[in-house]
Image (tube, rainbow, N blue to C red; front, side):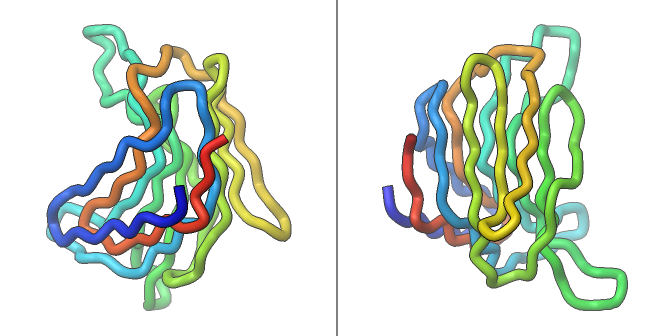
Length: 151
């Protein structure tokens, strides 16, 4: 797989890379981004799930990263796990630093790991089945996905 650089201003750039039931690992490096009046720079390694009609929500499931201002000034990368209609803060990093990750979906379970020295892992049983493959994408951001390996 190798490396994929995602560069967008206000647009979105997607790449479908992992068939259902597979995993991807590597490094994610959030370089910088373009802030808008109603948007933050974003990157994701995610899939869509089959949310039944009438339940609402986008069905976004996976690891999302946002470039956000720190209260004391400067910027940080905020990683969140999205699934089953919820978003949970998961980890933080400095912009420009490659962070080790692994995202896997198998038998209706999403497993996300981040970090190399002291990895943190979150497991989530999905309420609804996957409705497509894992994608990597960015919006309003410059993000490098490197050392990518499919499992």
